[in-house]
Length: 175
Image (cartoon, rainbow, N blue to C red; front, side, top):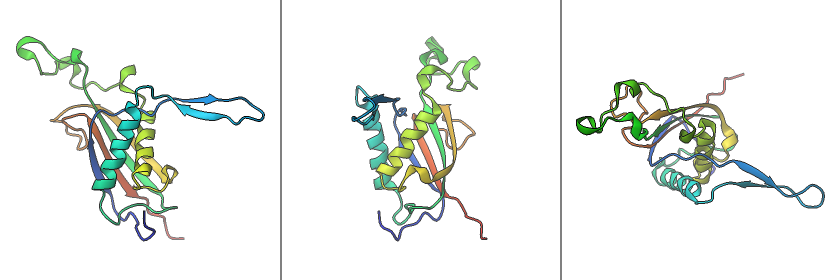
């Protein structure tokens, strides 16, 4: 990342795919002479592949000269669009239609992931993709989970699984 680049306005990126959480961290080691090591659980490698996909997608698709610089405060508005469970859909002639009881449902089940862990993986991927120098530069966040809904009134809810990332500079007030 070049030092001349600076994020001057909001950038929106749409990344298709099935959002995954950053794994839980586990401390391994003992006190004393051996340092503790934090390991992230990812037995299948799927989380690492999703993180690399986001990093590669943003690296290739991010506007030139719009990477944040070290010390620049940033805001992130991130929407995760998740597949609905099969139980939300009708059967027979109603196959593919969301049941009325589930049209306003939010993804709150254990299988939808914690929003903070979803967010952590995306912020790490933005750092890997050279969009931000360090994820600690993000000082404001808004993260939301929604189900796939092609007719949603919310602008960043997708008609397919994926994540919408809006990254913007935080204006520092003049002294």
